[in-house]
Image 1 (cartoon, rainbow, N blue to C red):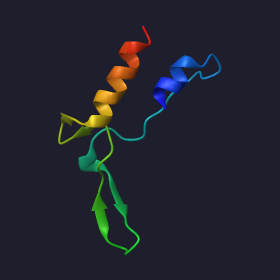
Image 2: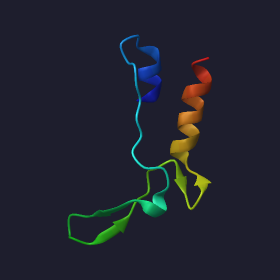
Image 3: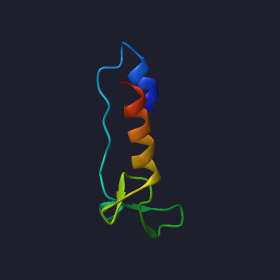
Length: 61
């Protein structure tokens, strides 16, 4: 999504919600509490999402 935004002249902002999976919790379809797994960091370590964002930003220069 970020790569598409960077290629578009009409995209003027890109927002991510949350930063670290340790603070990301959600309720699954069974009503069980689950910890997140798709933010930029997990316990302070970069995730695949972080690397994808870096690649998109690097290729836009």
